[in-house]
Image (cartoon, protein in one colour):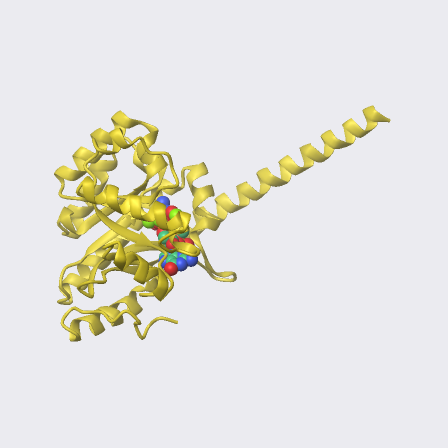
Length: 293
Ligand code: C2E
Ligand code: MG
Ligand code: MG
Ligand code: MG
């Protein structure tokens, strides 16, 4: 009886494995097709300085515009893209598209803004990453200083030597470096100090719930902000959704804000409208933007 049970369990295990493998295969094939058919789109979310009311830049965020299933968020396909290596061509598409769009805005006469692009682990380990980026900048005609690359803390800490070398080369191109989702990884602060970092992005999980002076999250956020100040990095709080969160961040002198309170990520056309509104208002953006819904 026990033996039979074991056999059944094994069979079920095998079946599950094969379903999983199949799912992965089809998603991989679907992602390949999506790339060929140009089904990916970038949304743009403004990052603002709330004390000046100015747009500092924007983050490019990928979505998959599926013909039947609609807009698919990155968390549903980036992990598989990462696993299969498809993130390399997808990532290259993201870089080129974000840079081309930023140049379009500059040519349309908007004040130049920095565009932030997320890099995955696989991309960061890519042998020719720096050459690739330098080539795209050249071809699209954008100066490196208008590009910010976001890598997570865990990607940065994976291989300290590699990170130091790559970040140094990127800095030589004038590119800004942001550490994304800061606080949830396990940075060694002594290493962090060795990297040429411009910005720490405070992870949104700390901002989310009950952010207040005496809450645990409040204490974590203020120490991250203090660390950023001590190391001469600028800071951006991610995922700011409420006035109360904003008020708390203001008491901690955190001016850099990104979140639904300011604006959701927007398709390029809506971002252009938002830039227009800010432009008419001498570069200022009112916090409750009309585009917010
Ligand atoms: P991330 O880089 O930390 O991006 C911030 C995420 O927070 C975005 O989710 C954004 O829409 C969301 N967000 C912004 N403000 C708020 C807010 O006030 N409240 C809440 N609840 N969420 C907010 P999204 O676009 O779904 O992207 C999720 C993650 O997928 C990104 O996290 C990033 O890790 C990854 N990702 C997105 N685009 C790319 C890409 O082009 N390449 C790579 N490698 N990864 C990407
Ligand atoms: Mg990011
Ligand atoms: Mg983040
Ligand atoms: Mg994240």
